[in-house]
Length: 118
Image 1: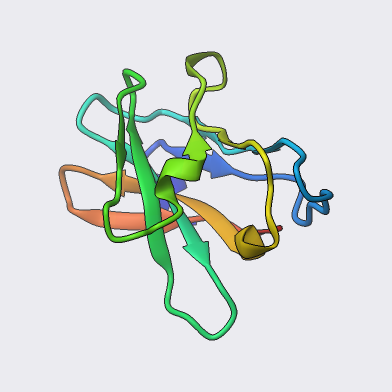
Image 2: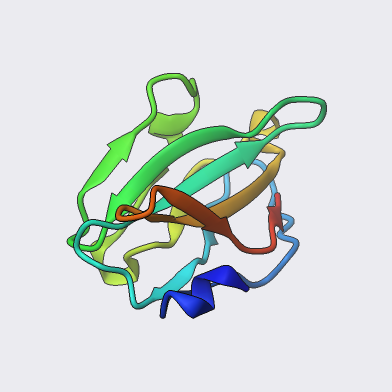
């Protein structure tokens, strides 16, 4: 995996999550070796659509939402679970594949890991 060469590791589990309407779900993303100029990005992929970024998170816990994704405000990040995505009040419209990716601020390359399907 290219990110390992850079000293960064990004992992996700479990691969599939099934929750009922109105529930809260955490989509975990563990990232180690992330530098101060690097970011972890979260993407949403709905059936038949291109990936759409929800938000990105700095090493310090700052979160920026992507205004191009209408559902970005449905998701939050807790500083205690820094790169995990939290979705409260799940709805059918949230059904998608989600993945976190590491953005190397120095080389401007992005590295991703296997997906979560919700």
